[in-house]
Image 1 (cartoon, rainbow, N blue to C red):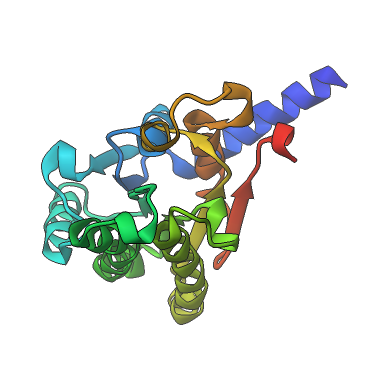
Image 2 (cartoon, rainbow, N blue to C red; image 1 turned 180 degrees about the horizontal axis):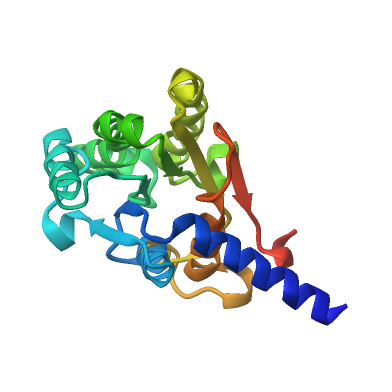
Length: 232
């Protein structure tokens, strides 16, 4: 039985490699956390990987022109873009009345307006390549959470938006899906919740591994939930 599982795992790896090698992927928010882990995995598949973030190369998803310029540069270098993956997000864990105006605006702009900007900027490239856009939500989208009401509500909006856009883009053969990981050990989570028992969290590597597989799926409009078996 163990040999059978190993053979199947190797077969899956071969399928992923065959489908993704030499493809061009842009990972927004790829300088840390899940995005960084995913960038490393994509490189292992011999994909042409381009990562961007506000800290890495001053790409700001709250500014559509910033995304437009970066994608245009990638297209000029590679001739096409097959995948665009947006892992950027902002969690500020405070009661709403404790947030200042800038924190409120940044939370909405990065978590939701940035998704809209990325989608609009992605359209001409993914239409040409019949490619895939992947968004990220959070398990908190299913229920509003005290002390991060804006984060939870913007993550719910991303799910609804992804489903709607998958229908709009279906005739164009553009796929758009969403990854919904449970609590994941990332720098953003640690800055808000401190150090937690590692066995209660997904690792960024685990989430990245599933995302890599999802890039080979033929589905669109899907919300893929990744769970830690210990929390089930």
